[in-house]
Amino acid sequence: MTRTARATLLLVIANLAVYLVMFAGWMLRGFFPELPEKMVGLLTFPGDPRELLFVPWTSVTYMFTQISFLHLTVNMLWLAGFGAMMKGDWWQTAGAYLAGGIAGAVAFSMYTIYAGLPGEHLAGASASVIAVVAATTILTPERRVRLLFIGDIRLKWVAPIALLTIFAGFSAETAAHLGGLFAGCCAGALLRFHDKAIARRAMREARRRTMRMKILQKASFSGFASLSEEERRELFDLTRQRYSG
Image 1 (tube, rainbow, N blue to C red):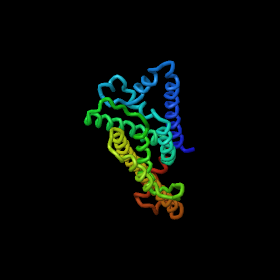
Image 2 (tube, one colour):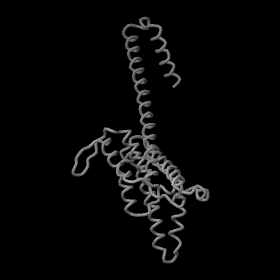
Image 3 (cartoon, rainbow, N blue to C red):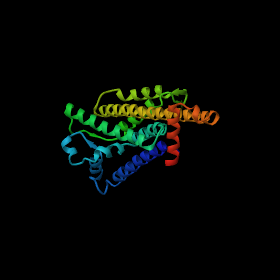
Image 4 (cartoon, rainbow, N blue to C red):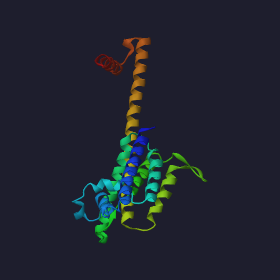
């Protein structure tokens, strides 16, 4: 299992754990009628910034809180599918997920203030999952996935078609989705730039190693006197690195 797959699995487990806690609260509502409502208030993100001052942790907890089992299932299927495909280290998947959730919360709050809907609350991992989908697609757009009844199709075609389904109508939740999409695109672009920078450094090091091998071969066959001033300096640096290491 790759590191990104492990991170994805942990995110799925966290969502399941929170849902089970919520489900337990609903099951106990016969004994504690106010428990489910209190749990929702403590875990979901409020649209009113003044209310957020009393529950600041909801900026993170809301993105792990699914109200319905269908919502949980759909989000976790998308997360498991795209999160595991993201290449790199665990922090890339986790970072995209958290960035999408935070951006979604900011967009949701801005929309509720603009639309005059301070009583709205946000729950669910949709914004975070959308960010992971977008980041994965930007990182590996040419990767092929197999869809039932369709066959192999490139990721760059799967993700946009799937994401278009969230824009059927504009609402506070759609604003959160747009925030997650924006964060995911930014995260994907940054991670792609990071990967290219690593690749460039690796290419420079490989070219330098090749040049050093050629200098060593030249010195071995033709003698040290045959080397130019630059080649001698490079050979001296190589020898000094070996002894210092």
